[in-house]
Image (cartoon, rainbow, N blue to C red; front, side, top):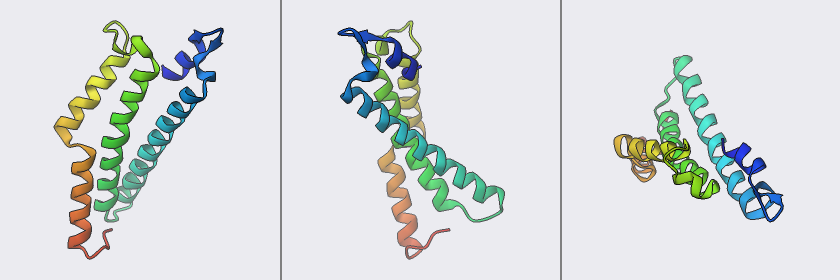
Length: 126
């Protein structure tokens, strides 16, 4: 939704996706999405292979909390006023990300949990 909005929304005679600040915000969101995705795949692979995956699952949960929240926030900002329009779907993603953060824990809670795991295991968690 956001990528097509950046291509189609025109300001000052050009698509808003051509502005450097918008490109940087979109790129940052994409990097967060890919980090979240790859961490999830690594944890899933280890679990499916029967390998220990507590650290990988904790890292994936951190990225889901951190990147999920920032992705929803970035999408809302990149859509401008449409991002808060109740008839446009973006506001729901923001609300869902906040709901999940409250339900499953914030990024700081996830990183604290991972830190405890590392401290108890002497820095080696599999």
